[in-house]
Length: 249
Image (cartoon, rainbow, N blue to C red):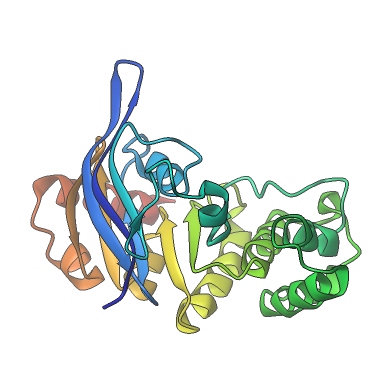
């Protein structure tokens, strides 16, 4: 399989605290990889290291066969190939929906306004937000904002879409609408790396599930292997707790 991203022996320290330790995994073209684990296990930091919002302390990130951490690599060009969807949407509040999806295309990819708008409309339609192009973010629900954020990331036509707990800031009734969009994207063959606490989504959509605990990957496998037959006690304990909590909610 074609490896798009390969992480080798990645570490990240903040001062005296080691947040990530000897992380090794890869993402293949067209694959959906879900990263699960407790809060504070290093999942979001790993994602931020992969798109170089955080600089790794050690190790390598290989993108399409080339190391992105050597000084010769164009970080900005690399970042345009990775779309990022954040927990808190990060939309421009003073711009309407359409403008939110065209600014980066015009500034970073040097697309004309017409081309950027055409691309934005295509992806706003995909996420069901093409009727709201003139709305400002304050006029939208959380679920609608996150769908716009996904359309904005898609408008850059990246090789990989990274999701950092995209439903964690949403009211429970809005979670489904965002997960449905993500499921459709997964079916379309998009390469996705998803940090999530939505176990049902990971079980249904992921090709592979990676379990992190205290800054290390303790286990990875198919959803069937991880959810039905986890090898590590720590994974079993985490899943027991998560599934118990979801039943009591």
